[in-house]
Image (cartoon, rainbow, N blue to C red):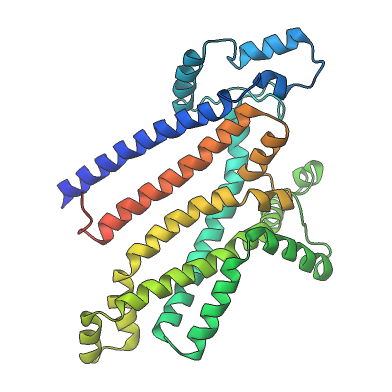
Length: 328
């Protein structure tokens, strides 16, 4: 078992690295094979020619395309994403990214944990009471909530809190600089949580509905198996049948859905972060788009795709652990 597990992990790591190489290549081609001069797009008309040539050299656009491609791959695997052009002119992108990534990880991480916990419980109860009033009502609500995009929840949240809690912060990741700096550590934590609350709720509500539907569907398949009927015939308590026999065997599609959802949430919360001006990775990618800061945009795309790959890699390992029948 240990040898099979080790071999499986090594193969998944190789697939991960090959996929990562393809993504880095596509990321380079996406921004470098576009028609026109990228420097002319970044800087306004009438810019000083000397400035244009300086930035062309800084960004490496004065080198042959093949050399730019090789350097791009090497620098990306070194986590050297180059220099920001417009958002923070002259600043290293590797120094610019960490605060934005941490804010998004905090929001998405907590939101996903909450969504999985509530969605798993909700779907479990709906499956166990199949055909009952609770099942029909919860399934209808989940389909409705899952069909509504996260940015509508964001707008609705702003409207509700603006009316009911007028002093609640509705934008930004923290209070303005000087005000936040003067707070004690406890007040800073409260301030960060308050600013992250509404964006987190917006991306969590639809996720709860999605997880609930997946758990319900997976459990309904398991509950018809013979070993469940055998456990019930032995006189086991319904809760024991559900927790000890049904749920462990229904985990495979649930784990896969969590991995897919993490990638979807990270890439899909761009609009939510923009609505709340929450300075996370999604907001940074939006800023990079509107300011034509191509190096920053390449870096944010890379981070988002890596997050999807890592979450799927973890899901593959968990699937093998949960079900050794997974082929290696």
